[in-house]
Image (tube, rainbow, N blue to C red; front, side, top):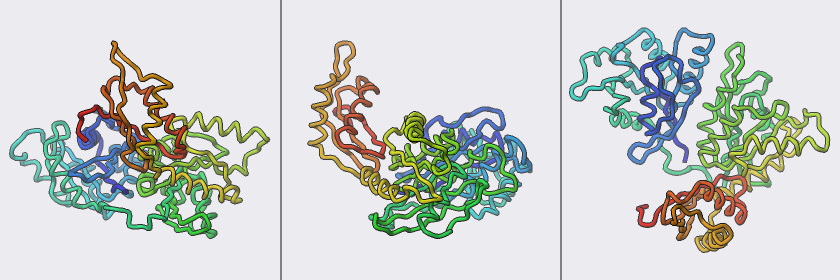
Length: 441
């Protein structure tokens, strides 16, 4: 089920990252009393009354800054605004309504998105301070007094945010049609690949990074099955594309990954692995999606009989956190191995939905624990009573044990490897949850 996206925006140093950490219940964003500390977007799942959405933290917007780091931060925030279903605009009660707040309010009103105004640093309980009413002058609705440090007012804030979101109870599309997100940093050939698959120039293709602006769905039916390809956009073109443009790829991939069942992570063979490739792939991994690493522009690489093996080995090292993902070398321009890509998509989607019976899992568990004894500490040995599969997409297993503390990470990894060795599960992450006997569900 795709989660809606909510962006937190505001000028620097009003407490956006502190509020983000409070809402998601984890310390994920860097918090510092210096403008510009939050640079790249941070995203995490936020839950309110059994409803989940993806919360995106952004750097502070400096409306008049076009150059340097602050200009990069501002453009990242603008991209978050474009992608979000709803926006939380954070202001500061202590600083009052500033000229920057007014400029940001006009930017948000032009976006046409619903905006929830949060007036931060209202740390005292009781009646809100009189200064709160000054924020009505921004013209974007009722101000919500909140304290990002203490959590005051965040319940009412989240209730207002959720009233603007559309939560999908179930996928409305045909369950046999596989949604596929083509993700990667700008200019790796995402649009070229989708165009080749469609047999037409549906997406604009150019050498400049960021030609594609919006995510576009394209349905494909062929001998391999039914697919919906989501071509994720890069950076909106703004005259000259600066160095470091790849940092904008993630925000465009979030919504597409949420909606997809399979993610094709496109790598440029002429450039190789980059840090941004790791970020985009890491998000797909965290969301439990089936993944394929597709090395594009393979026709443009000078190669011999050892080039492919060397590139494959290097990519396996670079993507060691998702070693389960198959690697395929393709050319969107010539169509090389694109048919094989369809077969892989169908295969990893089936692996992502694979269900294993409890009996088969416990047979595997008996063999695995006989081969390698569970760890012990101070004379007490780990006992794994039984294991069962809780869900699919991704395959999630629950192990019931006598002591959670004894279940070391290394032994968890050993059991995960045994599950993969026995049942395959290629192309999909797996989850292993630990429960002590007697714990509630």
